[in-house]
Length: 239
Image 1 (cartoon, helix red, strand yellow):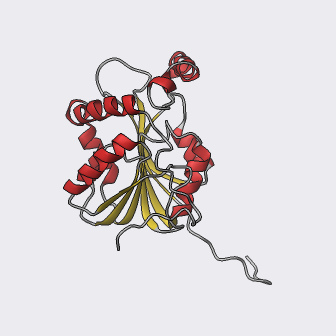
Image 2 (cartoon, helix red, strand yellow):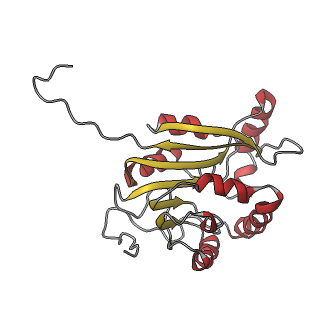
Image 3 (tube, rainbow, N blue to C red):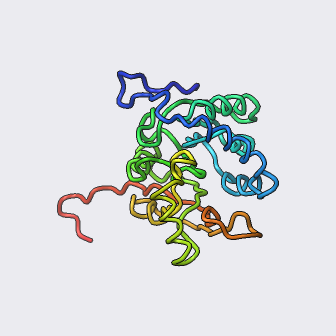
């Protein structure tokens, strides 16, 4: 069934241009393609998406580089991207994809989709730049079915006290303005745990694996789940 975004009369408005960073979008589109081979991002995407099945929502799809890596067990991908230029590139990538992909405008904090509509969700270098991490993760909880899978690949805080001090200093000054709202010192694993996700296996990585340690180098790749619903205890039931 083709994806239809909720209309403005629905519970979530579709914000067509809630994010607009045209200069950074052009820069990101170029460096992300180069990183596929030079930094091994193609292999990271394969590991991020391996084993997924059913309906998947991808938040902050960027220029759609994940689309070519989805396994054939995925029946549909709904890709949400707020930035206009990147969304146009994602549409082009969707046309080349071997799995059905629908690209739609929207923000992570107000996803234009129904509740409990997806078997899995994907965030890839997204939580660093959303305006409200708690709201974004609450939305992911809403749209995932109970027991649904969340795959994540994010960068964040790391490298000891000196690097953390540098990351926080850049966050308070020039970094978000130059990089489309990206932040360096967020802790994605702690944010997922605080949002109520059940954390599965995850691995910390350095990107690039070899070479100088940069404020953006400290990454994590892993899996989490929306907890399954439990039946309420019946009156008089003993444990």
